[in-house]
Amino acid sequence: MKLEELDFQGKNVLIRVDFNVPIKEGKVTDRNRIIAAVPTIKKVIEKGGRVILMSHLGRPKGQKNTDFSLSQIKEVVSEELGCSVNFMDDCIGNRIKDAINSTAQDSVTLLENLRFYAEEEKGDREFAKKLADLADVYINDAFGTAHRAHASTAVIADFFDAEHRAFGYLIQNELNAVEKLLSSPERPFTAIMGGAKISDKILLIENILDKVDHLIIGGGMSYTFFKAQGGEIGNSLVEEDKLDLALNLLKKAKEKGVEIHLPVDSIISSEFSNDADSDVADNMNIKEGWMGLDIGPKAVENFSKAVASSKTILWNGPMGVFEMSNFENGTKSVAEAIAKATENGAFSLIGGGDSAAAIRQFNYEDKVSYISTGGGALLEYLEGKELPGIVAIQS
Image (cartoon, rainbow, N blue to C red; front, side, top):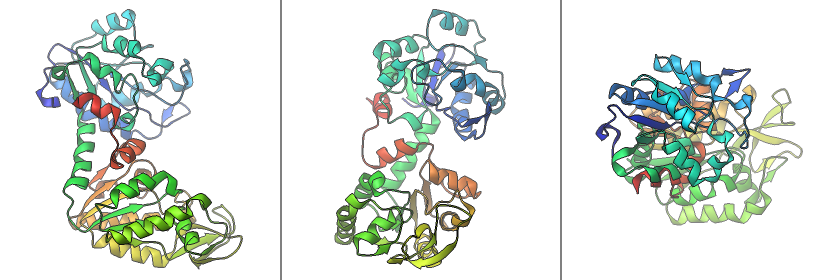
C-alpha cells in the first residue's frame, strides 16, 4: 500500500530510516539523509501515529560502542523535525516497548544503533521479530540500505501484512526517479560514468547500453580504455585484467549504436598530490612517471556539448580527484553542464556517493532533478538486480 492509504491513528509506527551520517567529534557534518526522511516522519505524526525511528550508524560489528551511538544525532533529528525526540539506549525488548508506549501519541522515539546486534546484518529472523513487536505498522524509508537483506530492511516485513507496511516518501521518490530514467526516457539519453574502476561499473554499463544514446566515460576508469587501445598512460590508474573487457564494451556500444565519449586529454601530475607539478596531455600519450588526475580542457568541452544536447541524464562517478582543488575542474564542469541542461528541460538523476557529494560541493544540488540517497543500492537497482528491501514490501 501507499503511505497515504495506511491508517496511523493511535498506532505505533516503526520507520527504518538511513541515519548513517558522518560525525566528527560528536557533531553531524552532513545532515542530508536526516532531512530526506523528514516528510515521511511528519506525515505519520500528522495522521496520529507514534513514530519509532530505527537506523544503523557505521560498522560497530555487533558490539555496543559509544562512538557509533545514535544518541549523537538526537538533537539534529529534533531540529529538523521541529519537535522533541526521545532516545532509547537499546532497540529491542519489553523495557524499550514499555518506554515507547508511555510516550505521547504523536511523539518521536529514536532507537539505539541496530548494528550493536550482530543479528541485524545477519538478517536474523528472531531479531527482526523483536523489532516488529514494537509496532503495529512498518515503513521502510532507507533506500541506501535497500540492497541489504538485513533484519530491519527486509526480514522484518514478513511480520506485517500488506495493510500494515509501505515505503516512505524517500524510497518512493527514488523508485519513481529510476522508473522515469529507465522506462520512458526523453531522448537523447546520456549516461555519464566516472570513478576509479571499470570493475565497479561493468554491470551498470552493460545494462545501460540498451537504453542510452550517449555514454560518457571519465575518471580513473577511462585510462584502462586508452591502455587497451594501445595508448601510453604513464602511471595513471589501470586495471590490467580488464583491458579485453574495455575493448569488448567499446565494440558492444558500437553494435548498439551508442556513441561513446572518452576524454581525449587529461590534467596530469607527477604525483598524487594537490601541490605537485601538473600539465595537460593527450590521453594516448601521457609521459612516463606522470598520471592523469582529471579530464582536460578538450574533454570538458566535448562532454559539456554532449550533455547540453541531452534530455535525460544519469551521472554516476566523478571525472577526477575533485577533492583536490587543482583537479576539480572536470567534475565541476560536468556538474555545471548538467545543471544547465536541467534548466533547459532535461531530467537529471545524480547517483549517490561521490556524484552527490560533488553536486553539493559545487552548489548545484538545487539545479538538478533528483539526487539519489543510495550509492550501492542505486547502482544495483540500475544494474537490474532485485533489492531485498524493495521486494520485501512489494511481495
